[in-house]
Image 1 (cartoon, one colour):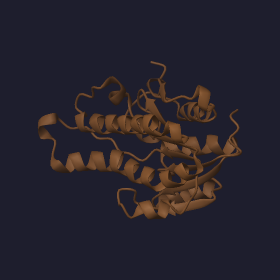
Image 2: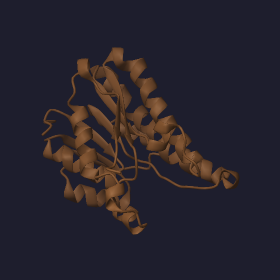
Image 3: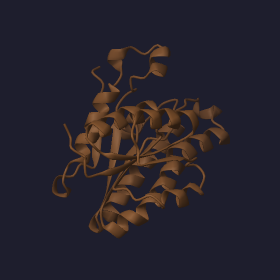
Image 4: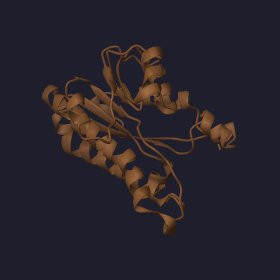
Length: 225
């Protein structure tokens, strides 16, 4: 099992299916957690997992940056995001804004919040969650989702190349398929076609423990089929 007892990790999207699996793994590994989320989902996460800070923030709002800068963390794991499909010719300005606000703007604000402290301490790790469609650079009937998740990956990898000399690394997680959640099962997906969220979380925890001279910048995790 990974040992993260010396780490303070900010987990965004607290209460979501992926974030909950990651939080359980981080808790088992002894990490200190800062939970960032919204409303009832955040409250459920805070009841379940110990946290040094619990922040109810809308990361689409630039005012969230100042609140995040008051908290010192070693690692940011950003799981906030959304998914939708639409025919390309039917996509609207609202569809565009929804995808890029949830998937990219939230990441941008989270990074702007944690980065000053990471640069001061010359140590930090930023993990963004992309998608299999972005890794393949194609998402038929989900072009806006795919583009926004590709933006997540390219942003984090650009940060890594820019800041690794200053002690701050970037890492991209690509779930290469749907994650096994109650919502996806209700939608009719079979369990063996989806990725086990706890296994995904274990991959994250493993990657977090890699030393600078053996760091991981991209993780692709696949379902069984």
